[in-house]
Length: 364
Image 1 (cartoon, one colour):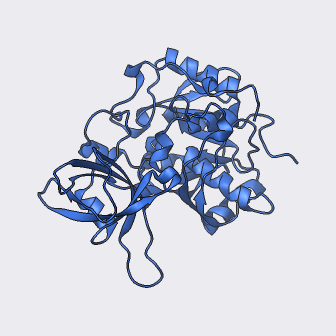
Image 2 (cartoon, helix red, strand yellow):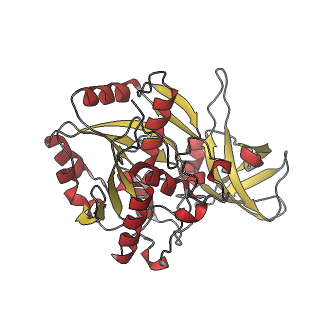
Image 3 (tube, rainbow, N blue to C red):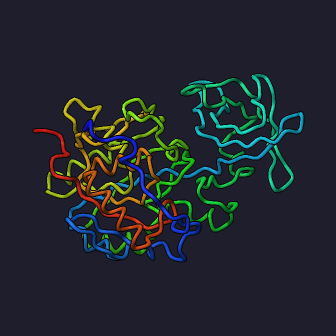
């Protein structure tokens, strides 16, 4: 990591009115800032096929966003808001209906206490607090009375990001979800994939552009800014990911035929680069598990050649990731242009096309 860079180097001023509060009527109607050259080029997302070649492989994150936000109260009547971060898998034998969650309450609930979560239909359920877990014990370990996925679907709300100020609606239920979402587990959407509709996917396939999927269940930590002035001191949040055999083979075939590996979003990139780091040969092989990979300038990319991504929060780990990929000075200039040209920012906003900067790949 270049020692000259500090946390302030990843800050920028953003007028509040540029934060997109709602999706556009059509998924493909967003703007696309082409940052693949020395100068920014203003495009529309529908221009994406012009930036791709037959044989390129698009890698999507197929995670599905849970209705992970729950509203409830303690036996004393105090309000509680929960954001389920992770649904724990059941043990090899028997059942376990447990989750890790962020809790907001006037007083921290103690182990053994119960929280009543209610839904709009008047029903509800009781969750037992088992204790604290995670980095700095920032999460609560809760036991639900039955399948957490079913309870969240019935009683939960769409976990909109903190910078979206309206309560979740039916529109959010449909649009804060990729058309390729398949595996439930995320509390935030892989937002670069929100621009794609079925018509765009068919257009790309007809042009010989390939696609595959990986999974990374996006956690709430994706919205947290870095607070440590020395980036190396930042404690990265952990997220579960899986790169399957089908994706691994697709990447190998595309590379062998001269195609580029294109990550659709930073979460797909983190899954691919995590898999490559775990391989003795630094190629993308099948693997699964938790990743806390923190990508900053100086990182040696091994898996990804190009990236489609939305605009990211100031002082965030994802802004550092794209700066590592495309070059810090280049990304800063692109963000300045995006603000001046009044692009729409963040989850429901516009997107950017980037290619890997010369010298940011793995040596040899």
